Length: 264
Ligand SMILES: NC(=O)C1=CN([C@@H]2O[C@H](COP(=O)(O)OP(=O)(O)OC[C@H]3O[C@@H](n4cnc5c(N)ncnc54)[C@H](O)[C@@H]3O)[C@@H](O)[C@H]2O)C=CC1
Ligand SMILES: O=C(O)[C@@H]1CCC=N1
Image (cartoon, rainbow, N blue to C red; front, side, top):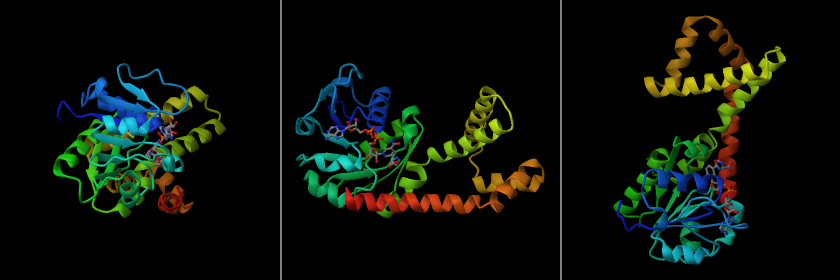
């Protein structure tokens, strides 16, 4: 990445905006003095050496790449002219067409990281407008590789779907972990042992998936063929509607992503 690249993050003190800034700094994609971050409320004390501002137009004027990381409900408050700049939105739901009109630039990208950006393990799909150049795409790839892994996709509908699947994704293993934890407590296990056991299961499963690179379909089949305790649990969970519950949840997130883009 060019030394001269200046990055602005609108909402740079937020959960996701702050994680992206930290990833950019850790990967040395830009030095702190080239970063302009905007905030609302009290001036943040984090990220030594960056420029903090409450003026989003000042941020846009100082930056080549502007990342918009405010909640969709606050998006109407982001009224800047970013003509000639590359804009990357990480907001759920807001379509490329609305970004182009409101921010007055045709070089726009819609990306959807997840909460694991905080530990460099996000999965971030993104889609670019036709006016985005190959250099723009390469910059976007490098930013989101710094946050984990990333794929360019070709349709906004894929982004809306992936908003539920991978954007909201870290919440689903957490939901499963919570149910397992509750069950363990009901069975009289001490909370510390229950918590350590459940956390180790999630972390270990992630590492196994990463190492073997095999499809989860194969993993489940292997356990089913084993015909032991795990197969008994999988069969009981499925009979209770596990797969349907997951499908229903993902459909609800997809629907919400589309509707947030229309209403915000
Ligand atoms: N948190 C997550 O796991 C994910 C969030 N997203 C998207 O990222 C965006 C940001 O989400 P979070 O970081 O979770 O929200 P957040 O509420 O933690 O951060 C948003 C920040 O923007 C600031 N802000 C609001 N309006 C502003 C304005 N006009 N100028 C400057 N700053 C302003 C707020 O004060 C806040 O610090 C949302 O649009 C969300 O859909 C996408 C994927 C995952
Ligand atoms: O829950 C949300 O609306 C945000 C967007 C995707 C993940 N978190």
